[in-house]
Length: 172
Image 1 (cartoon, rainbow, N blue to C red):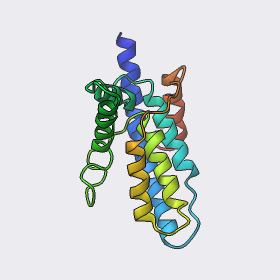
Image 2: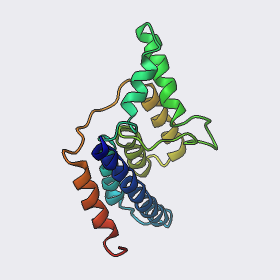
Image 3: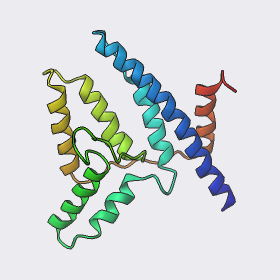
């Protein structure tokens, strides 16, 4: 049991550090993009997917648990879908403009199913109608039932340590 707590703490610490790195890299991508150059999201998306999979090994940071709990309040299929959509809205677009992401979470499932595709869709919007295209995409995600599944890392502690070393090798 103590070993599990250590692993969960290590996951949270590494996820926090990786999140800071991803945020900085994303700001750089935004800067490049807004100055009219082609932006490369690949490394940022790779970091976010590592975070997502690490969190799949943590008992408390999981979109599937949130969705299952919300659906459990419904008695009919339409009620279950209603509660799931409300639960998804609460942690994504709740509040609308200008407080979108006000109640955002760093959870496995939410990162890979919502944040990663949202950033990719934003930068690949061929119509140049990014804001409305984003809102339409978000609403579609909220109303689409389910969460994709992913297997946690077999040894999340090892992955956490290796990933930490990769991005923080010059700092420690």
